Image (cartoon, rainbow, N blue to C red):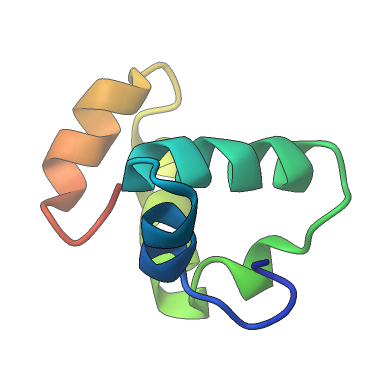
Length: 73
């Protein structure tokens, strides 16, 4: 559905799932090399995430997400 152009919100609505479930599915495919992360995240967001982890490589995902703010999930 994502590859057909539907947004994460549209997929969640159509499948009666929450947005985070769809994000989890997409992250699985990114992790396994079946989906280019650039199709899921803008280069700006990816850069911001990379900067946070470079500055604090031992930081938890929760801590990094919190420091990035509500525009990141």
